[in-house]
Image (tube, rainbow, N blue to C red; front, side, top):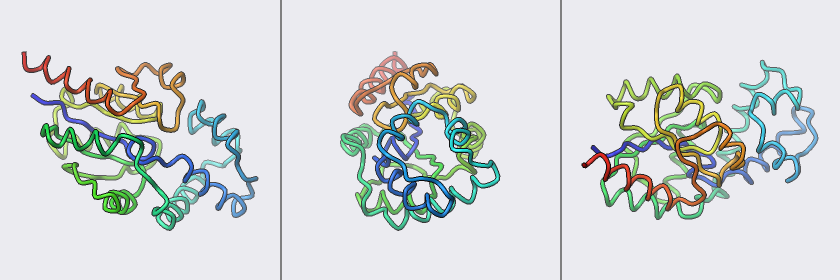
Length: 215
């Protein structure tokens, strides 16, 4: 049985950190925030989203409005977004090997489709969005049930500690990638099954697991 790869989008497939900084600074005046710097981004990369919101003193009730406006701005600027280095080659390799893949994102499905269309990326069996940014485990369980996928087969791949937490709650294997939002040390502290620095390393893990399951 081949592993089923479930990917996060922002920071894992799409190199969206700099775009996220631009969006945050475009929206900052509307919410009374000062603009953010690269130093701020580096600080945030070792914090959970809850702690970031607490440091910025963002009331919980404002978060849905901020997220909605951020995704609208994301759509406007999506032509500036590029794939993470090595990701397209990795996805092509998995496609050739007929490794099943899907994508679950906290971003809007429209934004994800726009990006994938721009780069002619089309390896996923399905692409769906979560119901929010903070409870991925619930959404993963729903999608696995909907698509009749055994959790034993799934490897969840993401760039944030909430991705690792979601994988743990769903009893999935997890691969944490270090080229996205959270730092390698912060990711490692949440004990993913695998921590990788380059997309080709995911290929090695998948090949090894496929060989083990074939024995």
